[in-house]
Structures are given as C-alpha cells and as structure tokens.
Length: 333
Ligand code: NDP
Image 1 (cartoon, rainbow, N blue to C red):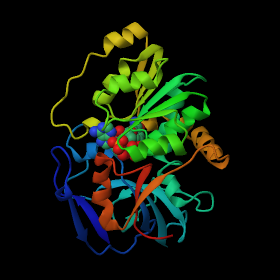
Image 2 (cartoon, protein in one colour):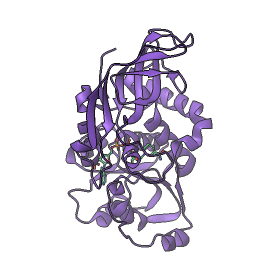
Image 3 (cartoon, rainbow, N blue to C red):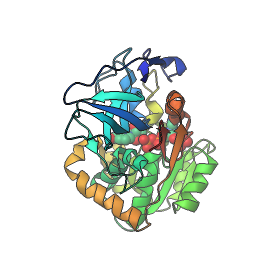
Image 4 (cartoon, helix red, strand yellow):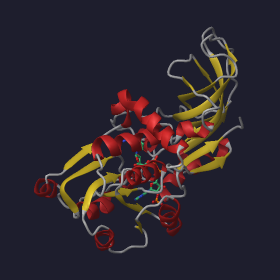
C-alpha cells in the first residue's frame, strides 16, 4: 500500500514537507479483518488542527504515522462475515491506497442510493454540519437575513441553500468572483461578497443587508466575522462552525470585543461540533436527501484525481481552490 504520513508538525501554513509518502506490504488478514481499497478520500479544514500538538476535540495526529480522515472504500478481501467482499463502506481511515480494518467504526454505504462521493459531502459530515448548525442553532425564520461565510465551500453552499429553502434573504461571503457568480447564479443567493476584492467589508455587508443580520453561520472567523457582528439585529443567532482564517495563525489576533454587541442585541452565539447532534443525523440526512431529490438542493464538488494529489488538495482549502466539497479520487468504482 501507499501511505501519506505526518512528517513534521507545521508552523503556520502546512507545506509539501508536512507530508511524507511511503510504500509497504500489508500483512495477511487475521480473522475479523477486511482489506479496504480507497475510492474517495476527503480533505477537511479540521485536519489542520490535528497536525498540531494542541488539545482539541479530536486528538492530534501522531508524527510519522498516516494522516486519518473520511474515506469511502471497497472491501476487496474479507475475513469478517458482517462485511462481505464487494461491500462499500465509509470510515475514518488512514490516508492509504489500501488498509486493513477490523470493521469497527465502518458504516456500509449504498452506491445505488447516491454517488459514493456524496457520503463524504452533502450526505456526510459537511452536509450534516450545515443542516444541524443552521437549523438547530441558527433557527432561521422566513423573511430573516442569513449571512454565511466560507459560502462557496462544502458546508457553506449547503447552509445558504437551506436558508433559501426556509424563505430567508441569504448573503454569502467568499474569495473569488467565480465563487460569487456561482452563489448568485447557480445557487440563488440574494447577494454575495468577494472578501478578497472588497476593502470595506462592513460597508459592503451593510449594503447587502439593509435589514441587518438575524443569523450568522460562521465558517471563517477573523475580520470577516468582525464586520458581520456590527450588523447584528436583536435576538440574532450566531452558529460558530469554523474559524479557518485562524487555523494557520501563529499568534492570537485581536478583534473588537464582541460581548457588548451580544449584550445590546441579546444575541446568542454558540460553537458546535457536528457530532453534538448525532442523535439527529437520521432526520438531517433524510431532510438533505429529500431536498436533493426534489431538485431544491444543488451539490458541487471539486475532485482531484490520484493519491499523489492529497497534500495539494488539502493545502488548496487554505487558498480557496475548491468550489463545494474538495475530494481526492484514488480509484474508480
Ligand atoms: P470548505 O469547502 O469551505 O473549504 C475551505 C474554504 O475556506 C476555502 O475554499 C476558502 O474559500 C475558505 N478560506 C480559506 N482560508 C480562508 C481565510 N483565511 N479567510 C476566509 N476564508 C478562507 O471547507 P468545509 O466546508 O469543509 O469547512 C468550512 C468550515 O467549517 C471550516 O472552518 C471547517 O473547519 C468548519 N467545519 C466545522 C465542523 C463542525 O463540526 N463544527 C464540521 C465541518 C467543517 P474562499 O475562496 O472563500 O476563501
């Protein structure tokens, strides 16, 4: 099998030397084990956190061991009666072309229900994050104004579309004109702002949100969020989903104090991790699948081809190379 290991803990933005490619023979399968062949490997912003040696909600990756993440794979050999040869599974697995598993934590997925890549995107962790964070924290009402940052990514595209389905005015913030056009033309966002070409974010947001902001779904943090806070309405809800603008920061940046704004507007600000809502994943997955079937929810993915592309695809998340969910296709189904 070919593997990608964590070669060194990055300081600031990871580089190619954060990763190391290796190749080794896998041992014979033991009773209860399966051999898995990776089809799609997910790259996700939270993995940056695991590359550092800091305490978080998931433990750090170990140095000189494979990076782990969401993978859709096929069972190509089996000594486990619950996972016959030919079954397809979703799991948190090592970045390897082939891997051995005892089956624990693997979820069978059905290639006839949806394309396999969807289980890492709209029907997987990012889709569930969008659904649960927006509906259970944001609680958007018809006619309200919803702002989403990181709007053209895996989570953001779904958040904005659900907010439209709920009858809201939706404003997206993203980092290129192509993304802005995509959000407005393809996904029906009411307005979208390119934060990279806008010098006055507060002014641009204020023009796009004449009635203020009722719900802010935050994927990025930093100065983009500072601009949004100044426009919060009374009883606004802020779902703090991600802070990607800070994941590579080597010192803690200071912003305006947010507490006086929360106090004056009586707003609710809540951080969350998607697994907090595990007991509602059934409902969320059914909701997402239903909207896809009805044609109300569009889905975009950026798929790099080949195992070698994994580091590059991961790094691209921080320069915004992806529209929708970024995946790497390692083998064909
Ligand atoms: P995306 O598909 O949105 O990819 C990341 C995007 O972030 C890039 O495309 C880029 O788009 C944008 N970005 C990168 N750097 C910056 C920056 N400095 N400032 C502003 N935008 C930036 O990733 P996901 O949809 O998977 O994740 C989105 C966020 O949600 C992340 O912060 C992630 O950590 C978080 N998350 C949280 C979960 C939870 O349980 N709380 C679960 C899943 C994700 P652009 O061109 O617009 O800059």
